[in-house]
Length: 248
Image (cartoon, rainbow, N blue to C red):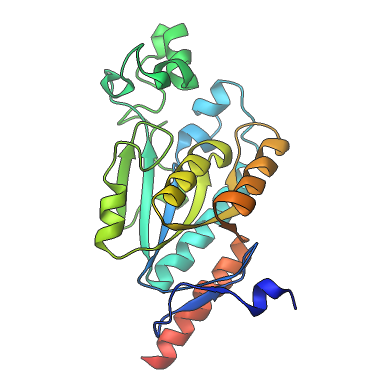
């Protein structure tokens, strides 16, 4: 057996602790100290006619990613771990964009597209629009936290860290879009805030080529966190649920 399975990193010895088979090492984590962060599962990034599609990115892999992310979300709900949904976008007046002195004003493809196409202003990743809304299988359930954000990272300009700390969260599991942008930015910030971060690559989708996806997986595995498959995380979560049922 690989050494990573024999000698996991142990982050919890609580009765509800469970082990996730991951790379480069497996992680033993606590049920109540782990959160699932669902990153920007919105029409803008996943649907035909959404922002990414309209500015020329390939979104054909969306159905598989949605299915896998939805399966991870269902398992997390069943296990009872804390769930956070990040939702990226701007107000209709684009006040949150910050104007020409803000880097996002220049780097956001959505903002650039709307400036080049004035009739589209307020249509892409804008609060209250179809583009900004969650795709149907990934809508937040009652009691799940929704964090609005206007930058790539879920920690930038939000109270995400405060809300995780208040619940004693030490481990974050990430699914969503885009692998190399908002997922990676959020994961890097989680690492720098002393959270253990586990990405589920097959439940994410990159903006760009497969090489971009592979680069993010490399960065996470070697420098910022851990990775595992949707199948392995679902197995771990369901196993924990069965253990809790047997003990209860």
